[in-house]
Length: 345
Image (cartoon, rainbow, N blue to C red; front, side):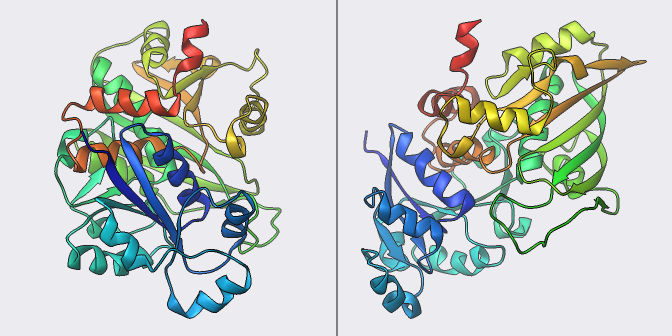
């Protein structure tokens, strides 16, 4: 069976991780990546020996790319013509413009969380609504927070049913290396409900959700606390057992040394993970408590890498590589090495 040919538009925080993720999939071929200028990420790509073919997204920047000795394999349109599906990780609004190109050339595309929902046929999550993405031309991923949130809520929903959830998101203010949000020493609260709660209801319309979001002056990871009302009573031990079975949920505890977001980022680096990335969300066992029927727990979201597995699932769905969600997600997990640590006990 021929490999599915994939291109990546936008070689930034998410795009470079998408490219690496596709390159690891044994049944996919990365045709190349495209960007508009010799950014630090593109310069690093060159210094690494150009493992991926590079395409110029803007003809206006060709001279600048040439000056920086970036080998260019062609234009964005040249790359799109060669692929089966595009992963669009460009800045918000650019993907919607690129969609016109994808439509004109009859190509499929998957957009990241920054685009508006109406850019796609389906708002997609690999575990929660895989089947809805089968064969569709355009999918849109949920944001990093929503992706991890849905993993946890969907896990309990499939175990005992979820009636409603209330979430509090303690959100990192910017990615590492970003300066555009300024140097801050403050917390900032958004109006409720947060978009993550509304997005969860779009993916899982049978669950009532609301939430509050607080921006914090840190760069590595978000923490979300979740209060879930189950349809069927579940004990703390049963909830932890359900979470333990999920390949993309890593159970941790404070006693082990996982005191917060920084502990998990450091652990990912100590594991030797590229860029300090972790595909799994972490869930603190010692945060799982009950209040009446409700169950409460806390998760950590590695915002730069958490959406990569679900994007690989999206390729599998729109290209109908696997029609069953478990077969598809398990295949993605195998190629990304997700869940190997569970075998260690």
